[in-house]
Length: 238
Ligand SMILES: Nc1ncnc2c1ncn2[C@@H]1O[C@H](COP(=O)(O)OP(=O)(O)O)[C@@H](O)[C@H]1O
Ligand SMILES: O=c1ccn([C@@H]2O[C@H](COP(=O)(O)OP(=O)(O)O)[C@@H](O)[C@H]2O)c(=O)[nH]1
Ligand SMILES: [Mg+2]
Image (cartoon, rainbow, N blue to C red; front, side):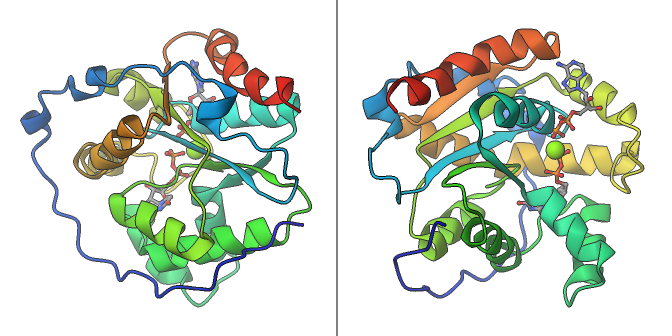
């Protein structure tokens, strides 16, 4: 079981996100980020079994994060922690924050970091595994900083699923999972939030050489063939 070694630091309070006009990024900004060549040294692979191996899986809504995570789990034995699923679980069990989370999800807004990070921390601590895929998180710089402070760790690398908006909208509208946020109005808001708040996270990890960009257009299997070598590097060093 993985245990946090650093002491809890104060959570960062959530501030209201400012939504910048998508046009200010020219729609092509994601093209600036290139795919890293992943090596064991870059991934920070260590032989210490107690050190958690953390991969963040990020990308726009409908880019295929959850679908690819299922394949990574099946093939490489990671524990999948979906931030969105953890939040939806809080809604279904009417927890303390359930109604606030529901309102945020309905509006396509980001739930305060302190809530999400605490849920992720609980999942990590209760897992017997030490390899984690953290899906749909961090969505903002504030999320990222809160994770690092509370968990006391950085991801070994970050998988970024890059997908054109039209494709993401098409996929979300046919997802059919009965989600309150898979309707065109909320989808538009989610895309705005993604464009406005996610870029600094991508930029941060790109500058650290931890970003692995995946072209998320194609069949599920074709996309997995881009993902597989990233994890195969980790396997090869075991
Ligand atoms: N490569 C793909 N091509 C077409 N549809 C896809 C692909 N990958 C996932 N999907 C479908 O698109 C929808 C969104 O995928 P999902 O994995 O839930 O994305 P995310 O977690 O990024 O929102 C789902 O209905 C899924 O079955
Ligand atoms: O770290 C997170 C992850 C998700 N969400 C909320 O949960 C929704 C659904 O997230 P999920 O990752 O399930 O959506 P996906 O990107 O997979 O469609 C988001 O739009 C946000 O409102 C959040 O606030 N913080
Ligand atoms: Mg998902």
